[in-house]
Length: 204
Image 1 (cartoon, rainbow, N blue to C red):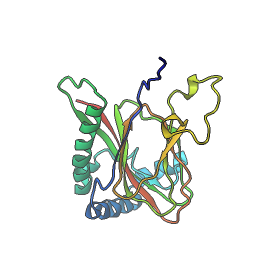
Image 2 (cartoon, rainbow, N blue to C red):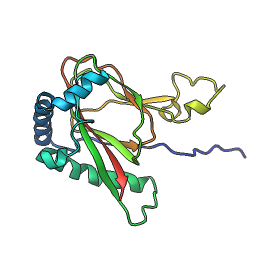
Image 3 (cartoon, helix red, strand yellow):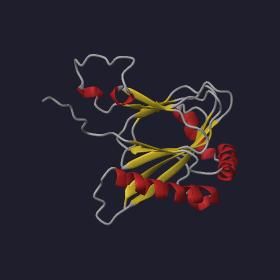
């Protein structure tokens, strides 16, 4: 008797309504204020051709600086631990701890090319504001570089068999993935800012 077995699982963790409307409003206000007041961040964005604004390279203390980010980190902490357990990691007395957290304000026409997050075990994004038509985040099969002469998959292939898988978020959506998983944000075709908070977790 023949059988097939699925191995080497790649997991994406999603929680909708992870944060409430009040938290989202507070984070949106803070993000827009930072996009004006964070001069170092704005200079970095201009120097690196980053569309819109990110605090990635300028502010590393948002949970200490702004109460809303501290509350958000507490929310993410619980989900990050649940995700780590679902991956069957041997934590050896450790737990996922937020190592860095930054805000992104992406205007119409903005995008973020394919990348991974180095020196972390769990990465993710919390979505504060998602205008209609803002588009998804797209994850790439981590084996693509090894497939060589593998035939392309059918357009009707089930989701687990696709080379790229997208997640379309809404305000309050929290997404987590292992940090080695390559992902990108396609062009924002929506009028208005797509505001999110990205982060990395290490074990400590």
